[in-house]
Amino acid sequence: MTCANLSLSKKSYPSFATQITTHDRAQGKDSLIVSTTYEHLMTYTLMPITRERANPKTNFYRLKIEWERDTITSSFVIQAAMHPAYQQIIGMGEAAIPLILDEIQTKPSHWFWALGAITGENPVPPQDRGKLQKMAEAWINWGRKNGYIK
Image 1 (cartoon, rainbow, N blue to C red):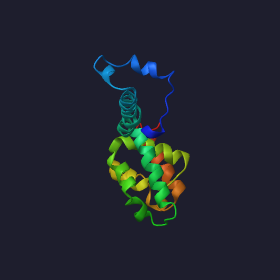
Image 2: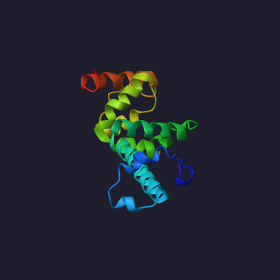
Image 3: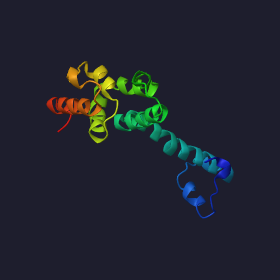
Image 4: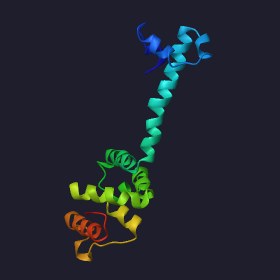
């Protein structure tokens, strides 16, 4: 939304006027609308992005969607694991573990590289490596044993 697209009725204008200081009342109606709109946009548009990135769960799902979107056609696990969004998930560290395990429980996917990088462990027995469902089960059991899954 730009200021040019903003249309305020005369009826809504007085509510803005009640929120301004004596100094601001010297502004013309148009200036007041622009400055108030700017403050509103700064508060309600930019701030949630900052809060969103501070929230590990929201950040994880944003990165997950980006990673899946960009690697959906790739059959190379290494290429998918090197994707910047996947690497940022790894960079989230321990905060990402329960989120990844939840994803594996819902829909097994190639999260094992990330889990191994974050935890330094690999609970998948050698005979099950390459078997997506068995690998998921091993990590889910690891998550229960280590308190990440209740």
